[in-house]
Length: 427
Image 1: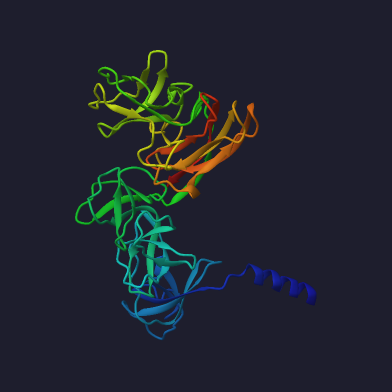
Image 2: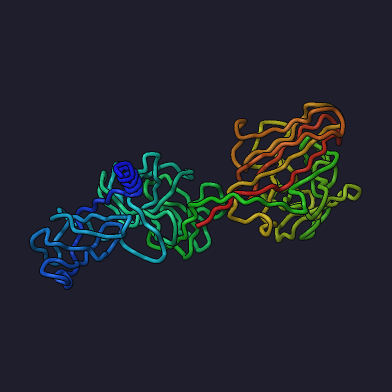
């Protein structure tokens, strides 16, 4: 029997969670404090993040009145709130709404946190602000602020009001952190560091937004390649427009650098489109297909002012590796049914070969300033048509990423890039 009692005690102890101590709870009502007998009933009080609750009152303290402050114990196992003793300074009730979920965090940002400020939760579980634009972190927005080293209420999910600096965001714009502590800034296109999307136009320094602090991996396949070219030279193509282009066609003249096979994509149905830059106009189009026999490029319809003799090229205007082979921008904005506009990154299955030499590479890079450490290279293993395979994850900025092809000769590189999945931002 003694052993059974000890075993039962052990089981009960393992199942029992110690009560949460909630100080400074403001008394809202004492109408039911004598419900059973004098001073042996219920009172209503705001209990921190639990908001207004019905609290068991058993005459401790000896007397209680509306607007008094009390300390409360919350027994999570039973859901019971019980008066513990006289409380200290009242803790204001957190703003409540069906639009967002809040939790308590200690403000250790070094300054007072104000409602609508944007910040993040650090590795210690504490609230911080940043002066780094486009910070990738555990973002949150302050719902109810307080002084440094005090508890505050923040939200990581839901629809909230956010403070911003700079240009007023419009509905549909995204938000990222800025160089001003506590303030967001407008971002018109998606990037990995986006933490919210605006649900209305901003005004007066604040904007209503839906938090996108969650990231969900999605497995995905598609019958169409992301991008593929058979028989490519090193990634470079420069020429001039020959004749007046239409909204969907451009005829090019003599190729002055690189080769036309570089832009000769395998199919107009590919999810990704190579970006053709007009360096005379400072604008670009998306390539759908190419007929090298007639020097004709079919593009996604455009309303630009391109004209005869304009200089065109495939070299990225954003990512410059410092020489050949050059980066090519790949745009996914025409394929949102396969890859959502809110995708933070994409997972690719890359295969490549080179019929002229072994050890030639196919590379990927985010659509941002070049950095060797950001580049992922896949090398062809053997001379010939035997392909090397690699899975590559690359961040998406403005629904774009870059590729780079190191061919050994004229038309010797073959590559296929297929979709395996993506990481999508969500509420």
